[in-house]
Length: 499
Ligand code: ADP
Ligand code: MG
Ligand code: MG
Image (cartoon, rainbow, N blue to C red; front, side, top):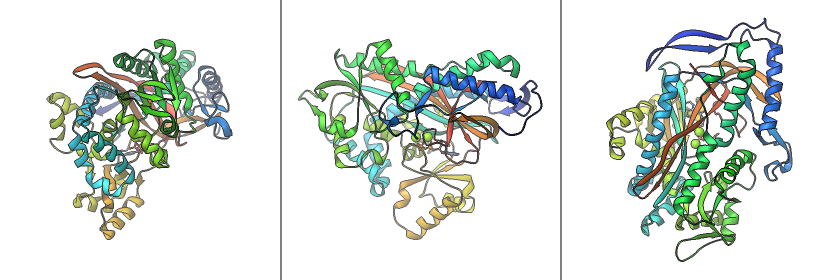
C-alpha cells in the first residue's frame, strides 16, 4: 500500500466544475490523506463481504475453476470505494437507455440497411461475414421475430476536457456483469454504512442498482410472452467460463423469483443435441427452449468449427426468442455505431426530435476509413484516435503509434482491409487515485472509469412490454492501460458516488 500517510482528514472536498449541464459542485474523493490502518480494515471487511455475498469469479490458478461451480473461487477484482460521478451525467445516461433500446430495435428491422452498411466489412472480416450469412438467410425466408428481447449495456466515458458523457459502444450481445455489478454497489454501500462517517462519504449517494433483478425480470417476461409453460431458458455458454457466477446470479434469480428453469449449453452441444420441429419449436436434448440467452457467440473463437455456426443458424431459424437475434447482434457492431453517427441517420430510425438530440449529444467522433481527411489527421496525431475492428470482449483495439503504423500499412497495401476497422475519437476521462483490490491485495494507483448502463427491451409485435434502464456497471482501470476488460484482467468492478 505504499508508505504510511498522514492521519486522514475528511475526504469529501467540494470543487466547482463546469459541464454541459452548467456549473455544478463536484465532490472529489481524495485519498491523499487517508489513514493506512483504516484502509487495511476496509480491505479486510470488503474481502469478507465478497466471499459471503457471491461477489466472486473463477480463480485462473485453479484448473477446474472455469468448469465446475464451487471450485476455485476468488473475489471479483473491485475498487475499494465508489467513483465520484456528476449526477447530471448519471441522469443523462439513464434517460438515453430506453431511447437506445428503441433505436436498436428499429435498426434491427431494417435488414437492407444492415447488409449494405456492413457489405464492405463482409469482404474482409470472416466473422462478420458469418453473421451476415445467417442474417441474409433469414431475410430470404422472410423470417419475422415477433417477440424481441434485448439485454443491452451502453458504455460511456466522461471526457475530462469537454465534460461530455460520450458513448464508447453499445453491447447487444452478452452484456456481462449484471449479476455482479449490483453486488459491487451493495459492497460499497455496506462499507460506507460502516466507515462512511470517518471518510466523509454518504452511502445514500450510491444509486440503487437492480441490474440482476431487472434482467431476470425481462427474461421471465419473455418466457411469459412465449407462453409455453414447460419451456426452458437456455444460456449459451463458452466451454470454460470464469465469469460463471455473474451468469449464475441471473439464473438463480430466474429460478427463485420467477420459477423459470435454465440450462447451460455450449454451441457445440447445441449442434449435437438441437433440433427444430415443423412448427418452429426449438428442442435441445429433447427439451423445449423458450428463450436463447447468449453468453457466448460474440467472438470468432466461439466458432472454432462449422458445428458452432450450424448451431447458431439452427437457433436463428427456430421460433425461440433469441437474446439477441442475429439482427440485434449486427445492430450492435462498431460499424453500425459509426454509420448511425453520420448526419441524418438517427432521423431515419427515430421520430422524436428531442430523443434524437439526446442520443447525438453522447456520440463521439466516429469515422469510416474511407474518409481520407481523417486518415491524414490520425496519421499525424494517432494518440487522439482509437482504431477498432468489428470485435467484442475487449483487447482488440489499436492505440497510439500502432494506429499510425496500421493506417500507413493499409494505405500502402491499397486492399479493402480498411473496411474491417472504424476510427473513433479517443476519449480522455479524468484520472484519479484509486484503491484497486485484486486477489486479496490492494494497490493504490491512478485510474480512469467507464460507466455502463444496462437496458432491457421486450416487445411482442406492436406491444412494447419492457423498455427501461436496468442498473449500471462501473469498470475502473489503471490509467496507463488502454483497454479495460475486467475478465481480461485489466480492470476492476466499481460503482458510482453521485455528486
Ligand atoms: P469491446 O466491444 O471489445 O468492449 P470497446 O469499444 O468497448 O470494445 O473498447 C474496449 C475498451 O477500450 C473500452 O472499455 C475502453 O476502455 C477502451 N476504449 C474504447 N474506445 C475508446 C475511446 N474512444 N477512447 C478511449 N478509450 C476507448
Ligand atoms: Mg463490446
Ligand atoms: Mg466494451
